Image 1 (tube, rainbow, N blue to C red):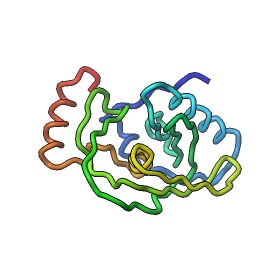
Image 2: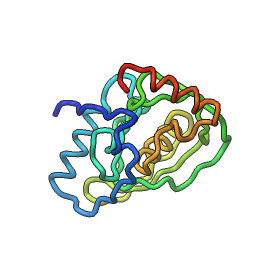
Image 3: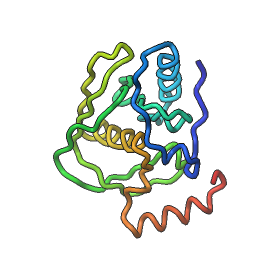
Image 4: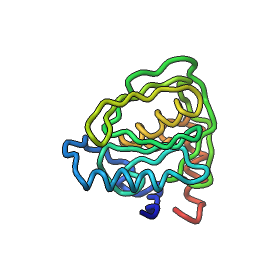
Length: 163
């Protein structure tokens, strides 16, 4: 399937708290395929369902050459150093800002057959796990920025051609 268009900051779906998946059918399999196809491109670490217009609690990822997905993800654990790391988002194209994230994260969820999945990692994997679960909870990374950085980011968003 072809990649789906990404929704941009300002689209109300990006502020939506997603619904847990309760029906594991062909529609869910199609959503997972769409997310995987949309994620499997150079420069993309993850895509949440809200970014392609769905309110289901699912994201796909592509980190360290591994492509995968999680249904009903829960950020189960964060640990290590809490620090600011440059972060961007497909829904806020072209902008990168220091975003506070934990250096390690664990997400639990299930696969298309409702079998348990545990994803954990440091560095980019930890950042992606936090970023994508934020999307599914109705947050965009701009919501995590310091007051000063958020003001600067929103100024740049308003001046962008995509907003």
